Image 1: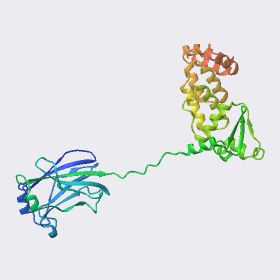
Image 2 (image 1 turned 90 degrees about the horizontal axis):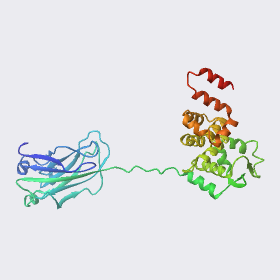
Image 3 (image 1 turned 120 degrees about the horizontal axis):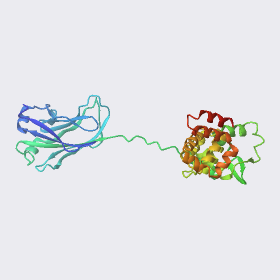
Image 4 (image 1 turned 135 degrees about the horizontal axis):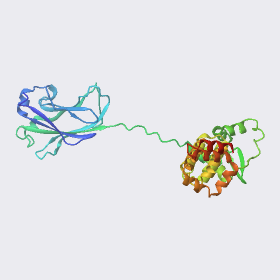
Length: 353
């Protein structure tokens, strides 16, 4: 039978959308040999990430109710597939390989294929008499195109968190503010619960023994500039810093974050300073690291100054004088590091000075 009735498949396009042209050679022979309810199956073709498909061709209809028609069905041949959603069109092609509009059938809705429902199609694709009386049956052959598109359910797109925006608006608009803080001559309206939630130091001060004393009167924070506290508040409410954070502000914010035990802000500022070390700022950063115990920043500064040229450039800056007077021990440590390894005695002498 195979040599008298052959269905070949040719893929025209790829990806999630494919057009497969099926050519039925030996229409008359297939009609004579395949009785009502019998079919021939095309070679399979892949669409949609590993799914295999085929078209079943029934030249005398799929059952006795459609014995005067050709039935066509799209089959999913992947055994373990579940809920594959598809839109498809089956079209008879003319001599130029173009779909014949009157014999093109498109699924009216998205069809779902699975292990239980393996096929969808048309019991009455075309009347045999109509095909045989048309110009589309050429040399006892007909061509059918299957346009198949896999439909992916759009995943529910959960929007990114906007909590920071809402809290930022709360700070900006001063809605329900219940705490006034004075810093550097400026007044800030804040929310005690937000500060307490974000800083263990604020929590102890605002919800502990100082709660009653701070309930009505403003709190004054000394030894901090207003713009630094404003940036600190912005981070507390929004968990973000300015994208143009400069080294000077990063230094002040690092001290403020350390003071109020805001660990993430500490790490952000320390990383900023580590990435921006140069000869002009290294002495100041090293003094800051030594005085406040910022070990990562200290190590980055020491590594930078291990270069004699960097060390020499640092010595002519104002920060160097401050470093000498405020942190002489770290200078000794630096000198001991850069001395050659064989000068062990000299290193011991330096550390004893």
